[in-house]
Length: 160
Length: 397
Image 1 (tube, rainbow over the protein chains, first blue to last red):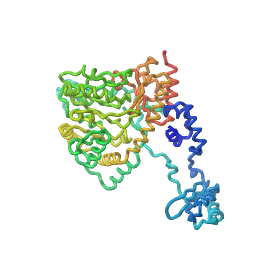
Image 2 (tube, chains in turn blue, yellow):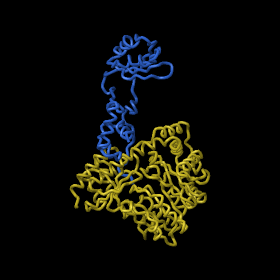
Image 3 (cartoon, chains in turn red, cyan):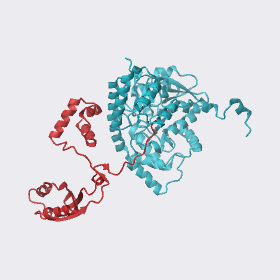
Image 4 (cartoon, one colour):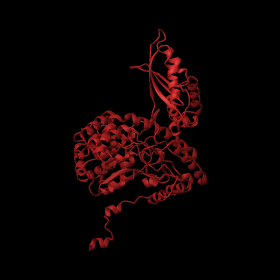
């Protein structure tokens, strides 16, 4: 039930509880309550919009940064991760397996601003061994949505 | 050119058989539609999804590899093997990939082949009314006589065994079923199917079961007719990829039947078609191997829209029984006092919403319209609000 509501909202957050109630064959009050509960326990974290910022010129620059970290006694990677994710510039922070430990996506107004963040804030953190910065050149797909113009074909208006 | 006396006498080159086919009752409607803009169409009979990319990609790869030649008449062996597995695991029916399966150009071709393989001139084929538009024509083209059994909203458009039995004559050859149904969205319960099977057995009739919508079923159990006790031997099972995997344009389907029937169908197929398009067969193979998740996602999505449109239509006052399969709602327009054609034409010209008059699918479709909900949520909602306005102007109760 909650799963059905979440799947609908994940695809389009603007669908009303009334519509969801119809689409899931559930009383509206129940849907509203489920959503309220999910918002409260942060199953639903936030409602956002996928924006293609490339449509606006020179709006922002993003970089993927690989960070190697020395884990610390008792807290592992979590303490350093927290030091990093508290910076608003770090839009996304993941702990990953493989040749490095943290993958960070940083967004800024210019390459200069991102480079400054890495050099002045990120790299000097105690426990950070090294960083590799990949500036993002082009976004093709964002969170399941293809950003290019829609390509799908057209249908006949009447098909028996 | 000298005109033969025969043609002069009849005044046309067109065969009597072709002339016998009723012209599409909604020709005028098509023309009207072509001249309009801003129309929301609930008049389609196909998914609004493009074919899942994995399937498209497999076909592209096959083209790059130069797989552009004819295949075996009955279809690529790997596809038939995979299909055999799919039918066994999905529907508990066993068909040998060598000899009991034939890959066709959509269910349309399979249906035509089945009719041509079994019908002698004058043989009768029993079918529900309303039903898919091609059923009647395929029987006529094969020289047979279609016999319609009325079905009604009050009995959920299910085909009754007693009604079928009452129409059996010495010329009856087969019963043609198409459930989940176009245009009604009706399904047949296992019990009802067992009743039909009983009648078929008692009278030694074949059953042709068009199961193209088998995977599009909502909150109900789908029963493959051939899986009923002892029915495989007198069933021709027709299926395809168009609806479940959003592959309408690929034109690929299949027939599964006892050896003797598949051999006859293959003979006709070989002379008229050669083989289904190679790239489409490759795509179909990929669909069977990896398409189930995509289908499940699509079915979940259709189900939401189904609930939305059925509730919307009922709220407007157009009574609509709950369709449990395919992607059609089939509401009654009786409260407007209009015929199906009037309703559809006025709705199109006044509110720019296209639906298909139920009468296009047989006499019992009169008084209903077919609304396809395989269209975006936003369009369904806008269409519903236009229909509400329209019905508000014309309702007579």
